[in-house]
Image (tube, rainbow, N blue to C red):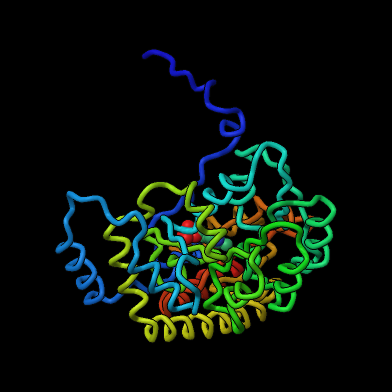
Length: 367
Ligand code: PMP
């Protein structure tokens, strides 16, 4: 075999590791990716597929999927041109990096935070300005503001509720950040449906420097389809559009996205169920001997036990329950003799029972 020129790939890219979650969908309880445990109802799937089936497959889709974009603008009370969609908010994060990050550009990224942002920033050779959370794992808006002002960062990113901690930033603090950062404030609210309180899109009418990222992957239960959106001032979105991939999403994605938006009642019902189950599981786990819980504001929570996290994960997996090792985030790794944190998302009633049974059994075997 000839040797390929892998050394020509930019060093900033070569230094990264591929984003990969080593799991299987066949587990009795798959609680490791913050997905919705509920698939879309069959009749909804069929309606979206019918719609897609009637569209021409040989023709390119709209350069912007106008119907979906218009529906999202209407849903959020935003003027025309405020929304861009993409193949998951992951892709939109890359679009943002292309727009705002050059070599050495300061970008404020509080930590711990969804790891994609730091990875994308590194690949653009940007200067990551880290703002570590306090011991309570909450992000400190004053420290974020100070860092953004000190470095004159064109881009500051916050995620609320944050993944992997589940902690949220208060709306008043988001507003303070929007008014105070010297550049653009990106608010990733992938989990906002689970939060009691206003959405960050409410900030858009008074703050032209805010961009809000949302996903269809969590509350709407469409992680398998890859749909995300970004909302902002139309003039800012118009600039960002120049860097996006052509056609954004395909006809199928648009049809499915529209179908999901049409079922707001079902989504709300499921979100309420997941929130109630999260609170119940947090309270239950918190009562177990030696278990500490960090309650979350999204569809997941952190917990730690006396076991080393890789052992905990492996023993839960042996019982068919997948939870996530988040100790790769330094703030969540074990220290001072305490093991680090694991993250569990809320599943269906039977998945949650499996989680409880597995955790109780693992702890009992250990104790
Ligand atoms: N933002 C946050 C905070 C997330 O946790 C995730 C997914 N884990 C994403 C964005 C990516 O979402 P999507 O599926 O839309 O790419």
